[in-house]
Image 1: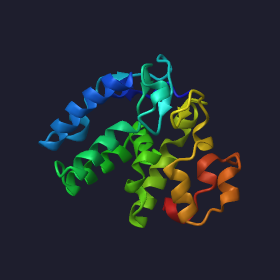
Image 2: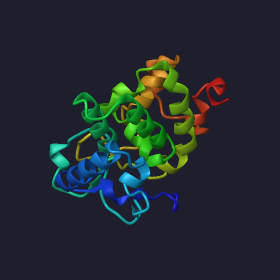
Image 3: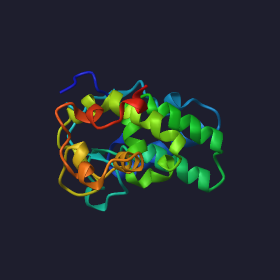
Amino acid sequence: MNTTLVIPSIIYGNFENVHQRLSDAIRQFAVGRSWHDALNTQTVISPEEATGFFILNGPAPLLATESHFHAFLPLSLVLEEVRKGKLNEVRKLQAFNASLSTPWGLLGIIAPVNQILVYSPNLHKPILQAAVQWWDCLDALGPRYTLGLREGARLWSVATNLHYILGQIGLSNEQLRMPLPAGGLRAVVPPSVLE
């Protein structure tokens, strides 16, 4: 397991507490704080030392009262604020770009609940580049990913926006259902995307 992977503690806990902390953080982001400052990304927790799943779709009623990593939630709240007119597209794009720079941020982008973030073909290349960059440390966590069920699975086995993007660039449904080859994610992403 990658011992250097750390996650901002703001996204860890039961859903109600994490939702409240992140709502406050997104309000701070909306009024001008940077993404990383608003989410206090310097205060971290190691997934090796914390129990729970990485929830990629939510809220997840089956898991709401237990402590988990609510990976989907920061960007879900950003999208909610955009829909309400409280956050503009420029700030949304800043949150998106900042999310590409961290493994936990990438999880928010590929979370199915945030699929609107991956519709634009112009964003597929940077998302895939980030996914290849962070894949090994995310995959090393093992079967800790869920869309809200009480069972975890390896990240590749969970239907995410990454599968959507890979399908859009030409991978077949059969390829997306097969286990990754020995080369990992890099082996299925066309080399032209990584240039």
